[in-house]
Image 1 (spheres, rainbow, N blue to C red):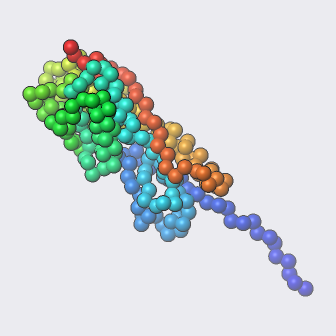
Image 2 (cartoon, rainbow, N blue to C red; image 1 turned 90 degrees about the horizontal axis):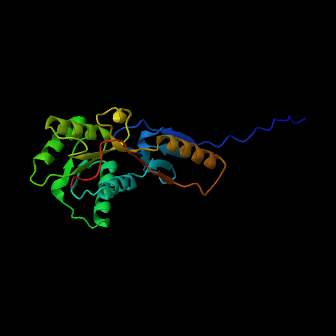
Length: 236
């Protein structure tokens, strides 16, 4: 008599969400860094880009964030707006600079290369490069620092020279790091939607598991301008 084998349930469909620890710039995850078994499973990356066409990513819109930060300063009457960027070997630096450049062009302002400084994401570079900008013949009235570390350095450079922020120089940062509300003055900055990114990543995982073929491959969420006390109307 033939034996009766129990019917096994089909193996569950798998998908992974991989959150990345926030660092100055989101990294690109190459397939070679993943174990072979995981390489065959759809993955949703958060705060990280992927080079695999079959995977998904949830990030924030750096271009739009820098564009809106620059527009905020332009609407406050600033025309000489300097930038302290991170190293240009990172996607974040390029996207944020392009957002700044687009805002300058859209508002028909003169793009001045002398106002562009390349830092390394650290406090010291923000301080040093701000000193260079303040020593120039045509001094900016505002600085957009591409992260809060360099923005804090810019505030420090102003204090060393007896300049007031924001009365003499407006400074806007990017990221809304924990210390940003403790600087003196408190830092106006662009807040990253980290909580929302985690929520959207899990929504994508659930959609994949449900077989939803319309799941968006790459989501970019909007940053939020946090107005504190380091930026003001341009001096008259």
